[in-house]
Image (cartoon, rainbow, N blue to C red; front, side, top):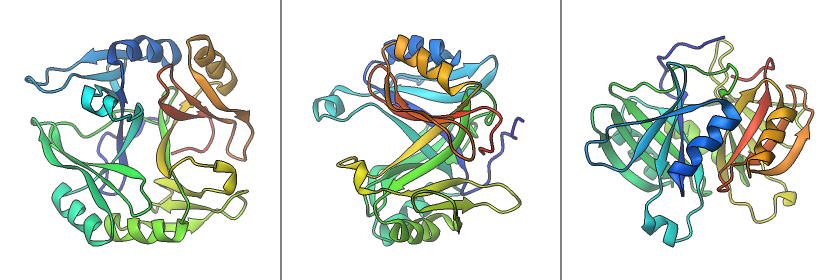
Length: 263
């Protein structure tokens, strides 16, 4: 089903890729998801494009600057939570032990954004909509369907986001690792929090996006054929097959098979 384009405060509303090579990322995601990258007029600002399926906007694409690349920042997918006030939300984050990564800033008339990290280090974006409300379609083939935090201190993360976004949680009792669902009420789950086990090694805490696809196995094969990486081969879960992959530049994301219960 297609979700409405109006998101509620506390819901994930947008994802975008910060690429090392924006031009090279366009054909990769076109081949993998069938996306078309439409360059945006940033009025002299950093280059940016919107990924689309037909007229539906599904995500964004930006170019990492040379300073960040020189400091060793990897390409990454960013997850954004819609808020009523970016400035008020950032104030709550810092008051609860978080730290600002990107100060609040206006993006022309599209909206206002900021990035902050929780005390454990995972970074998330916040978005106060202007003319741009977020992805115009989700939960259908080749669009975002779920957002998940991998954390080493799940109780501390729960407390932080409850204070910042007002989130409530319920424990997923059958998960092999400790897992809490962000409960949006009325059947509208907003994402999940996963406890990182020692098997994760040195991987830092992070937010990640899932894209729903008709076939995880076929999409993984396409990713491999176009120079991408597979960190975790497709495996079955109670909600459907999942795989953890990366594009040809190393930006990681997750896949979930179409028709399963992802929101």
